[in-house]
View 1: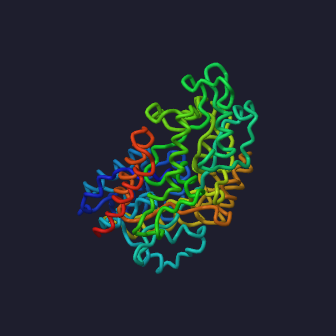
View 2 (view 1 turned 60 degrees about the vertical axis):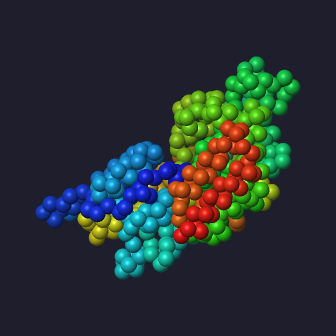
View 3 (view 1 turned 90 degrees about the horizontal axis):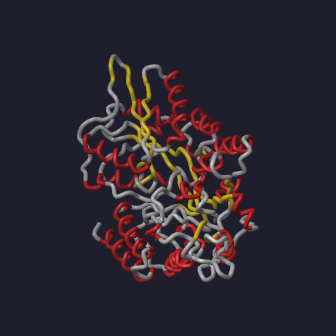
Length: 442
């Protein structure tokens, strides 16, 4: 879960810490530290930790939780000081840089010794955590993307969002819906004569444009549906295609929405995030991931619902992303940390997460239980699972070396486009040259 925009991690220039990390031990007792960034999940993993300690009385687990940006900043500091958590929640796009610095433990020998059944996970999730024959994580969850919309505003506008189309030329029925959902201060809709784009009360779409090199929360999904492919091989390709005209077309289309007044100008975009703007009622729809299901559907401010992503020229395409639990290479307690990671990757824990319905767990049977828990609670979210199950309906976000450098290069180019300083095609072509030059020097 969680958007995959990669922060500029200072850890890249940091050598692997030399001293041990994690909690201390006394009299045979071990306290492991476990890092999470999602506060919504903390209670579920605390249940797992309590059950784990009950079965392993000499091991306790101390969970630390920090919000997304703070999480990575803290981890950088902890790695520098040699005090990183024993077990770390990890994003697939990030882990190669930690591997490069020797900061993650190879789990494959332990998985082999304990005969961990890797086929229990949804296909594609376990494979991405292997580099050069070494495994660096056990899968914990997965996510796909969808449209989130304000149900009352959609009803008032008379739009049906259930089966939208999109293309970069005129935006298809997706843009028609966005136009109709946009309302100016005089009550005129974006598709009506007299609409004043200089005085917009409700934006039809709240795109997440500050989305790094992957665009999981919008431009990446539509670009792939337009025929764009990020990289020559995934995971661990060495040639990117950010100069593909299919991507530039998609970026130009997103940029046109601000010009028309359907989305806020980039320099006027709220720093609070898409969910805050949608909850304020000043935006009608956005694109989000399944990790946000409860955050939106339990909102007390607005009534939200989900709709499938629009179908592009190459079909409906959603980013498919998964997290894993990894072990800090310099932990003082590798055996105990492995026991905890193995437990996190088992049905014993993932069924707990499923029952709480905070995410879709990586284990297939647990994921089915999560969907059942959502349905029991009256949440219609099966479209996330249907998208994951659809033939050619998903794509894996790129995993390669130089992830943070690529993120910085592409994010800078994108920002120049959003600000109107450069056209998409030349900006992205120049960025692509810089990206591929990183691999030429390896």
